[in-house]
Length: 204
Image (cartoon, rainbow, N blue to C red; front, side):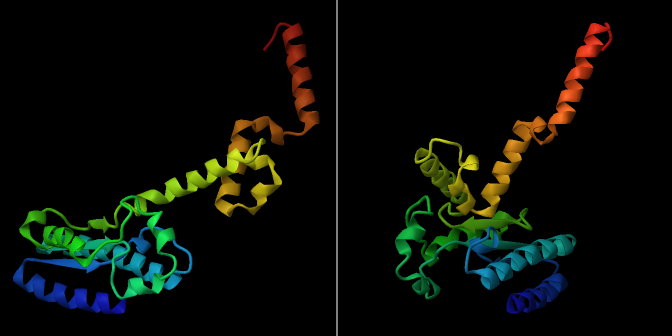
């Protein structure tokens, strides 16, 4: 993050003197969504994306465009660290293949050339659709789970082992689906009797 910031700062200083220029930061799809065991990497890439948008806002009036590319799983030296879990990663990529360094050429040329002269503050994912598929994975897990249970997952003990976001969603759906459930019985009974008396007396 520090290196990208210093490099962009120096490039921006020289481009402002010329009155034109284009800065393209290399972020990551990990900066667009959360991923386990990637706290420092994902946080730094998310910070770089935010820095890109702030610089684009500050330098737009000076003729300098600032954009970013968010690559997914590209076959580089870093990709070797995922040895043994490639098949699991491929299942989360709709295009079912890893990217190559040459797959970034199109987005880079678009942002760096005059073809993208009206683009600034943009973040282009180049990940085979991986950022789009995270919700699909969640719902596929949910569908597999509901097939194995007769009751709703919110009402079963197995639901306790699901992530916190799913428990919160279930609790919220139950609360909005039956708003009278949280009202004490004595209040429901008194309100019912009050309604009956008002109807008998001819008032509402």
